[in-house]
Length: 438
Image 1 (cartoon, helix red, strand yellow):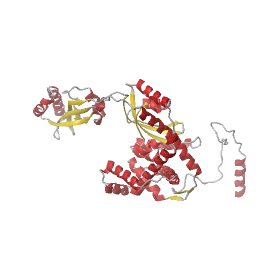
Image 2: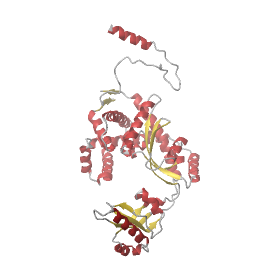
Image 3: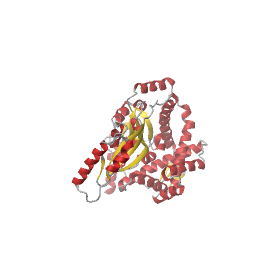
Image 4: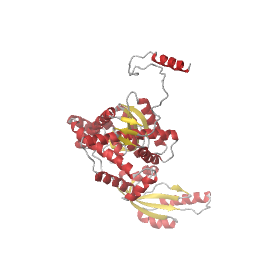
């Protein structure tokens, strides 16, 4: 009887009426699908053989360790499994990129990989390579794993420069038009944007969107955007942590993306947003005025005047002393008199030079920008940390930005087109690859 049940199920499945192909159903699949087996292609060991080259469980585990450490928190098992599968896909793509570069007789010297690794160590550990090595091992990764990622990035960049970039053409008229649009937008805002691009097809769109949502959740919980962009993004900006640099809305060359970014505030994360070819996650790092000097780039000379409170000071005493401190600071006749006046108020003075406005907390930036030399911010702080003011003693205003020149703009448009062709190139490599999952 059990065998009869299997036959009946199979007959019913093959008896389903297929739908006609359409935009919503390009494969013409029936509305109801009965699976004939129990195998789940998403449940498998995280190892693979790519055109004869083995990706081991250790390879995956060490790369996962880089990513999970960047998240700043322990991931649930279900999320960790998704990360492992994503890392495996990334390692497969990386392997294909290195293999294709070698097939095209493009080699990345080990010395170049080591130099890039040393730069990373310099940025994070003050040029102490041993400290970098020890850190990677302590989190469950390894120097070999990070160097392998660096090799993949360098090999792919060289391959694109030789096989793709020479065949990308940008008309001078197109560059001139973009620059004209930028000049017309002078005084409006420009944006420093971070991106994560996840490639998808109509068939994989739902799964890729779900992956994007989970990435956004991890980022919102404190994960490093730079680390996630390096591991997950399929844009060429992945190598620099997804950083697009300072751009103007017309440079996005998409009304949809222009509208999204224009409404964002620094520190805000949006996505995943469906765009041609996949999904886009965008992080607004900062914004400023187009082709005009940003007052937050001004360099300041400040005097920090502060008072402290003994433990057990009553709220009434704190209020009275803060009020007296505020009145006393307001009466100081410029920075030259600050030290003597502070001594009479029982306050201490610290001089801070070469301070950029944007390096100050956001709550203070707008207040500092509007000060004249000799004026002070309102008091800020707490009983525990003390109460202080910042007195402006000098300011070097920034020069106006001239924006990208013709060559810079042409290079940016070329990069966009190289990126699109790179996505197609990698898709072809996947289609032609022999990949065996273990």
